Amino acid sequence: MELLQTADWKKEKHVPVIEVLKWDNGVVEVKVSVGKEIPHPNTTEHHIAWIELIFHPEGEKFPYVVGRTEFAAHGASVEGPNTSGVYTEPVAHFTFKTEKGGKLIAFSYCNIHGLWMNETELK
Image (cartoon, rainbow, N blue to C red; front, side):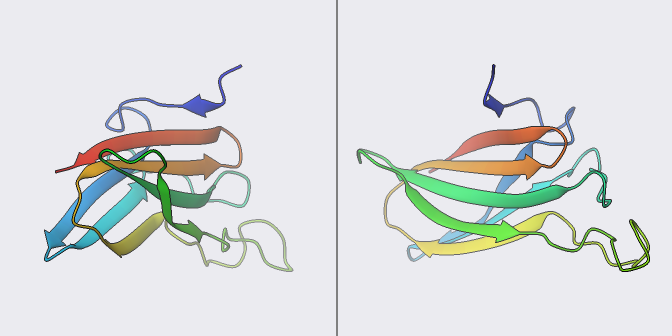
């Protein structure tokens, strides 16, 4: 059984997309989203529950958890599934400081299709 799933985010809607928006004076700004090319449904029955970003600096033994964002509004209300009209979008922004390059690793969790991963280099 595969614990983590990966794929090309341009062809698979569950893969977290990592975009380094800025790396200036040691401050790194990263956007992680799910469904950039192919929108992911965000319904009570099928949604992205959370996104997490990890940074593994070059030459270091262990990675660091930068942060995690949970998405809690998936259209449910006391009236039932998909009745509230309030749906969070699976997009998260992270800001941290580092002088080192390394690997950015993002995870996303779909309540139906499990745990997905993607990575990119911070250079």
